[in-house]
Image 1 (cartoon, one colour):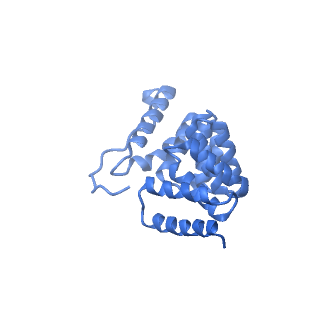
Image 2: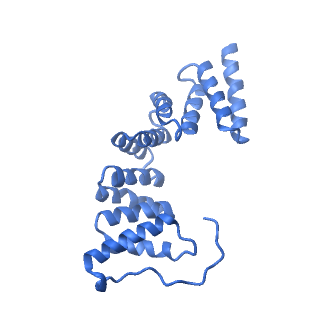
Image 3: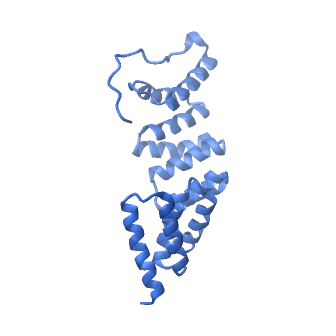
Length: 220
């Protein structure tokens, strides 16, 4: 084993320990950048570093993250998580069609993954203004994971596509909770306003739930 390869192996072990111990982001970023510099392209150590670094800096440096994940995907084109990371980075960069294409590739590798379905549906609805197409993916995601973030995305697409009754049916249990997310309140306001505008105030069959005795606030 060459000194070059041994340095990469030692660095990777150090990074893996740092990941387990919640090392500060900047320190971890420097270690990963160092591992990329001392690893040969296409090696397992280099691919590990590129993926970890892309995920680490995604929100703060989406362009740099996209460059690292692009290099990663050249060697791991059948890695669904890699395409999902590319989708997220392109979404943050405003390249929404590229992001949609990336999530479609992730789903082709891992069909039915609720998180890929959710991200793809949300992009189609909000970024590309295609709520009817988004519903296909958001319904699939909701069937697997009916938690609030996915529910809200589905409700939003239902509202945008004119399925007001179904949107309200999904909203009611979210509004019944003792602690209602501000996003849910805002969405309920828009759906209710659209229903009233469409049917007239006297004909509206839905209202906000009656106040109930407040329970102890639970962690979301």
